[in-house]
Length: 193
Length: 290
Image (cartoon, rainbow over all chains, first blue to last red; front, side, top):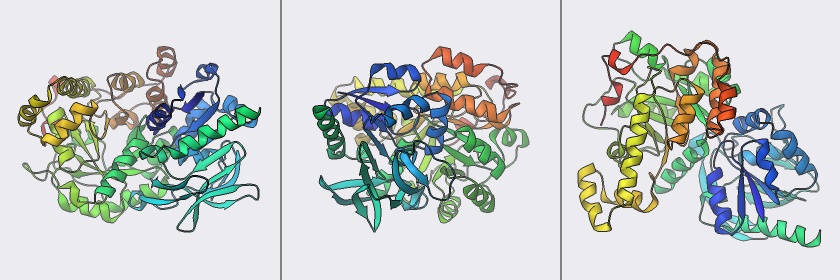
């Protein structure tokens, strides 16, 4: 199984390490040619969403990735990656892939002093450690979207079809269960395709 | 505290592969954000102007920093003088995202750095070699950058500092475990940090390049030498076309290993900042705070 990890900016190395521990092969995506490897899944890492959004356009990666997502390529977005996948960003006109019907608030917990760690239940996995760094959260989710985790009354993980998003960073903890969950999802999909 | 330190190191991890730009006004901060900066450093004068003006340079006016915080959604950093505990308390009070305890400003204390473990906000500090880097980490720095030589547009010192740090890391890695005690003595740093570097082959925090980056090629050079991201101070807003140069440097950091892309990015950028060679300067900022 080959997973593409968007490597334009941010915490991509941590995702790669988590995937490799689980035995997946990884392709770093920095330019269009990198897509030739053929992908079974895609991870959009944390970082600064304004930076990654701009670089997606400048590197020409945006359109081919959007086409792959439209065709149902499984994708997992953490933090900035969740913002890139959301259909709406609260108080902002920008929309990137618009692949999941959620409305997210950027920097929802404030500046770095608002960053925190928690342990909470992820539906389908159980209790896991969650690290929130200047994190967004989901203010509203569409009818078809499954809420996977709620912390302090805010939605911090959601899933709809091939799209999985979390406000938090499992790749910054030693717990690999969200990544395992994502890989299982890909395997299940490929088994019945 | 430990938890907070982890979260602060984590924020630096999210800045990796990015460019942090010096800005002096909200308008410049907007330009930097739109060009793809992953954070901005708010300061009243950029290093080249500090160097030209001389005199004592201090923390920026908190009102100016707040103006920049309101202008952008990316993290905002600001500088305090080495050892100036109260300037750091003030920046923490306005909820700055990262404090740079910086040799660019005039040092407030010629012996002691700030005890950064006493703060909730993260600190980044400059270093010329592994000893300096690990001493700053022992004091609580959550991120390291090379000192380079700020405000010169001359990359030679940043290259020297990054190479030296990485040589020293490789040397520790190759040592027998019973040799690490003496290495800690030699480097004047705690044994636990030496042991961590020996085991992991890297600093325990993110390490950026800073001081003298003026072109996309300079930024890519630092990345190829092992930097995890780049600070650009005077190089952008002292150049002919800041927005274009900023965009080019951001892309160069992402595709630092692709000469064809770097060639395209380096075209037609207008005038680079006028540099000063290290032999031509009287004040070496990098010698402050060891």
